[in-house]
Length: 319
Image (cartoon, rainbow, N blue to C red):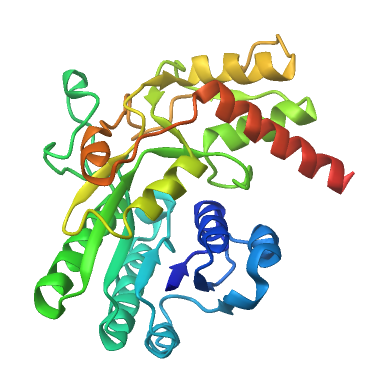
């Protein structure tokens, strides 16, 4: 099968490309390498170099539409995005251009290619806002209430996909992702807390916990997330599905688990609370299990160990 993966050189995208390559699919990766890396695609290239095409292109560029239209994929996985919540607040126009104009470029390519389906990466941590704690874990019936331009763009993206389905017959599934972590996540910049802690702990540097550390997140392993995208190829048309574990883990608890795995018993440093940060978050994955036959398989402890092992290998390569 011919597929396109936008953002395919990124952290989540490359894990998906690996699974597609192992299955024997022909894959076109479209990425501008602003956060992704060619190194992330080495495993896929080794698995099926002749079936993997990589194009350096920004999804905002009209060339994106032509690339997709000419490639004529059966399925498009759209993961490329401006994914920094705080950056979206500081510059909402850049967020809009990347996450919505870029999406339209991709959708137009799919329309012209008569693509069967697009699978869209949304954000379960932002589209629902911050409902009452008693509603956790959140299901798909939770009212939408995005509190940042990023959350708005992700919500609007799923609505655009539904519209293209109605107008042009381009099927669509939206996956609202929890806090994804795992190998290849960048520990610098606006990275996930697992990657940040991993990078610092392995260097023997102190980690900082902002606020009380009792704020919670739903940490879901990247390989499990990639499997959810794979499961959506034939299922879930017209659906928005939460992809998480349904389990809350506090940042304090996360730090203790990771520090224990590394053999460090020192306390983290304390930082001032970050304004606008959601206090508690978790997503109910039961509908994804019902519709896709998907559920997370990797425990937090096993995922942390795999992540730390990967970061340690990169540290050794660079030493």
